[in-house]
Length: 102
Ligand SMILES: [Zn+2]
Figure 1 (cartoon, rainbow, N blue to C red):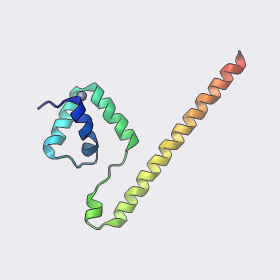
Figure 2 (figure 1 turned 90 degrees about the vertical axis):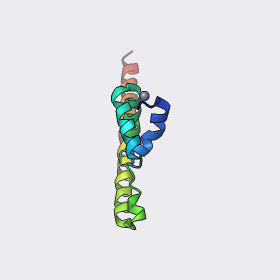
Figure 3 (figure 1 turned 90 degrees about the horizontal axis):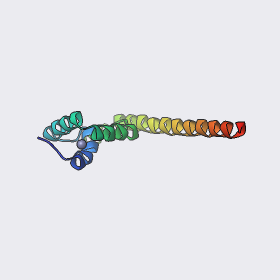
């Protein structure tokens, strides 16, 4: 079964969080193997949401585990933000150094 790219991009969030049905999961995996554009999209998506939310934590009443999961996710977001800021600063410093040389 071959899905269209738009449908795969809609399913990527469910696939990443482990909430897609087995059939959808297999179809998405199959499509990702053969489509570079969707693979790149999925890589970008994983960077913005590195830790999948498992809704089973909440429904099983395991809030300690859910809280731990949320802390890890927050930490990832903080690390991503710091990486972005430091990369921007490096680019700015390099630009200033280049301007000063002229
Ligand atoms: Zn595709």
